Image (tube, rainbow, N blue to C red):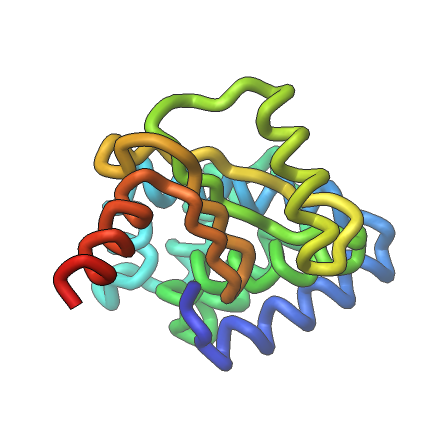
Length: 178
């Protein structure tokens, strides 16, 4: 995760506003959708950063595309356009996600595996690892990585729990070779 101080400040302000308006879940959901749209259409971010278009035109495009989104999210996006900080949007969404998860007593986690895990497996991983990091639950994203050979690697913030065949083989190699 990027540790952009600018994104962190915007995320904290957005988080406080969402809490005041009692729209934390809605804002969080809208930000996740916004990031999905930007990842799927990187040209949108290029367009919003392009100096050839006026700020008013960019705001008009944003309000048309995200007309169903929470007004707080749209206003934040317009503020980023005003301040020429649109490139911080994905970092802002990541920082906001961390703040929202912490407020719920949860943490975001990535579980790397060789195949898609079932809901039961994800719940088991969530309950086992949430205790290790002092949280009530984990919001897990399962990422497929065939290079692991087997097992899982769990990343929660700065913590990495690696129980993969690839890491065990690497450890065995270090032990044998020296």
